[in-house]
Length: 153
Image (cartoon, rainbow, N blue to C red; front, top):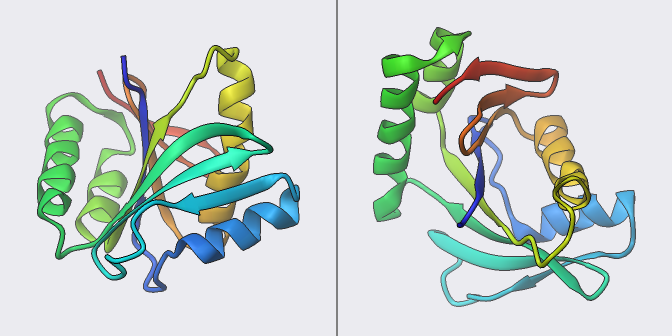
């Protein structure tokens, strides 16, 4: 079953794969990003995130002109309003101010869950440090740089 983690960016600076890759390589030179769709530069970009030779995630960058953008935000706002517990007004405010969605399809590849998720942690650290927003983990809720702030079901 697919597992997604989605970062909702409310920072004015654009998110680009080159910036993400540079940040991850500062953490560990074994990270690299293989951009899959180089023709679509300003709307919907897709890449694979590798650590060494192993793919850990497929990353999509969605912007307001993309068809899925508004529906993704509306779906998350409704989930928070309908059953979220915690800092719901803060999360809704960030969602409504979102200008970029970084959607990550986690690729387990027969690895232990903890190994895979810990290998993705530098991506979230970079986004929280150099952009701002909230991270949504399927089946869990929303996180800021300190931890879970809204639990959803």
